[in-house]
Length: 283
Image (cartoon, rainbow, N blue to C red; front, side, top):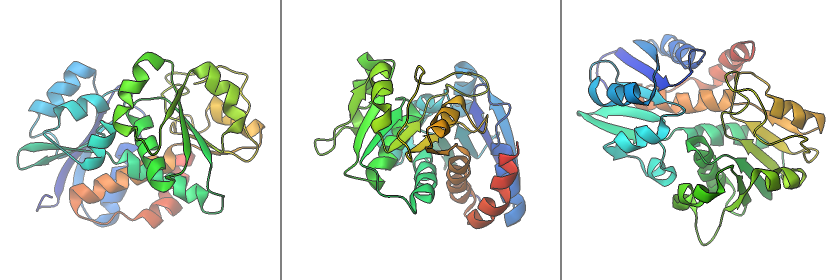
């Protein structure tokens, strides 16, 4: 943690010009009386690597988003236990000249899911769409919250999925890997569905599973995308009277954990849910 009150933060990824992270951190710094800046680095892999390794004076804390979470994991000199477990880093911190990698997506996802599950029965079955860093964070998060959950993962690349998920497999709770076609067929059987791919974002319109799509009535369907606020996937879920949640609460909650780690200040989460979330929902 820095000892002064001047901080330099940022986020690196691709096609992230519309990221809400600068607004999130600017709001939090104003609320807690901290001076600092937050910069968007919309960089391809080569420039992202240079930013992470060589730009020692440009940032103190760096958020990492798609498609650079695996790169951040590779370049981290130290990693948290949870980052090691999911083999993905979305938050980098400079500590005594060394790069420390963490995964706050897990905590952000768990906060968002727990918030929606307060008055719902514990799910028996769940489907996670995707095997990337965000999906693996959701798998880890589900496992911690619901150890007995029957967990299935849908992917287009079944040949490489087992390797990508190897660090999360356990004898006590295996993950079943499904093709997209099979996942779509059994979609109405899941109590919880989590869409963790970029498909459906404003820069990549479409459905993560091929329509027509059917959902269990009353299921909770989460899409980690927040732009647009309601993806085609969530619209389809609502047509079957499923409850839906986009990625805004997860965004705020994972950023909150980064903010506290980087500044040592408590993030005003209650105020964020009352003030910041409604503002983000209008965008």
